[in-house]
Image (cartoon, rainbow, N blue to C red; front, side, top):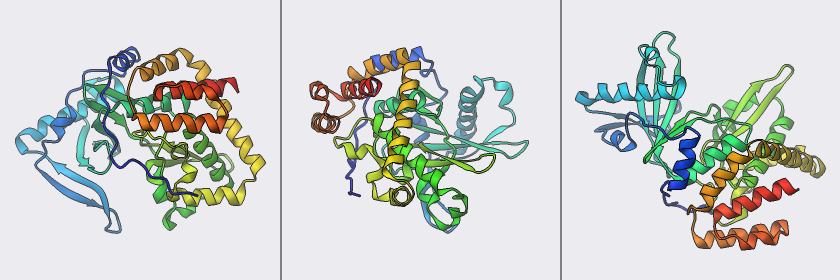
Length: 342
């Protein structure tokens, strides 16, 4: 396992007109009742600690009393727009319990906690700076993975639904080990997740950037690894940065695979995942083509990273067409076309 070096500060990439047209066509671009910058007007914050008293990197923010009621009303309205098409008749029993902010990472998200007064049930959504790389990542996740994800965009503001699951770094801690009742299934799902990230060029899948969704099966337990951070979509220049197996933070899962899966079985799981991605691609070919067209006309990485990645992928697949690619959009297109050909 090698140590990968992620770019410390990825620049934000504006949403170009082609991507805006795509988002409008598929109902991702709508008017929302507030902007990201409005939430930055908080005047006080309290650091959040976990149950053991450790810093979570999140802080609960407070707004001025004279504007808090209005902001909270608009935050609930946004939740209604995401969940039930803005039907305000369902808003009366919903409240904003708290607003959290995290300055760690590129997207600097706000996490909005919505509570149902009738049954005290909580739900969350996130408000982030709209970044083209992340939006391409969200769309590719929705189309090519087994997971659906809901998000909305307006100007420089991105709204994302909460992805349910236990963060990978927490899952490895002793208090969660009781949930691992079938290590073979977990190892299999990590292999498939690894392959999924590599095919769609999603980078930086360290343990704290994905969650594990645990589902009870009729005779056992099933696991699914789900990405929750899409900032590094088609940005980095090394192919290993798109393979979760190479991050030291994921060593626990890699060790499971080494212990429980032989090479022949691993290749079977990899081919199984590639076949599933190819089927999803064929079913949504028109939509994918429009998304790739916007990506080809966009800038979401640096020239030196694009040149490095296309050379590594050309050598890895023994596929010279990668060398003719002018940007990350073209690299992504060749990568997916190669998947279909094979």
